[in-house]
Length: 210
Image (cartoon, rainbow, N blue to C red; front, side, top):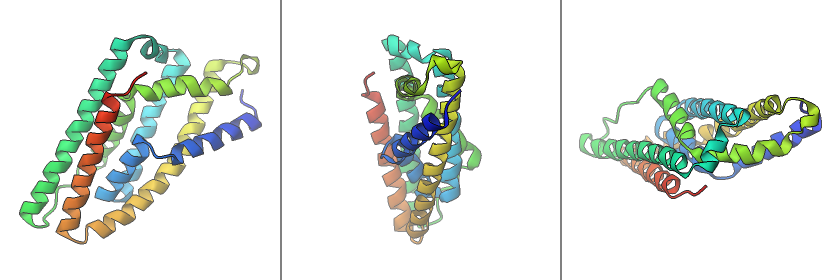
């Protein structure tokens, strides 16, 4: 099992990694800025659910497949990039609709779709599994017992750190949502900004290397 010192060191490192700008916290920020803080928090829970998949994959050794198979890595990247481009298209379409209807607004997609967005965003990014494959084992020691259980424990600590940081990001995004939603022009701007972010994330994922 993990020692207290190892757990605290890993948790501190996870908090720092969560704070560093990256695709996931930018994703949460844009969802919060468009739909409010609660939407960002639900999106975070979806991302954390995706982390469960990656943690389990590392614990079972499945992530090594993506490290050793260029085809599997490329296929999963393509799926993730296509999904992000679809979200970008939805955001640009919402912006255009707002401009025409003069503030009637794009319909709120609902919390369940936002939760699913978080899951898909995370699961279809093979770099997360590769990151876990490289990062988590550094804090494991076979002398302390089952490595798989240690990986799962570290994964849970990483998820807790993610929730703490990303919920804070969601609250910040919620404040931006209040400000931007005061006018139709602000709503159009934030939707199109979100579309650009999604498109940028898609390109970054598409050209990512192992």
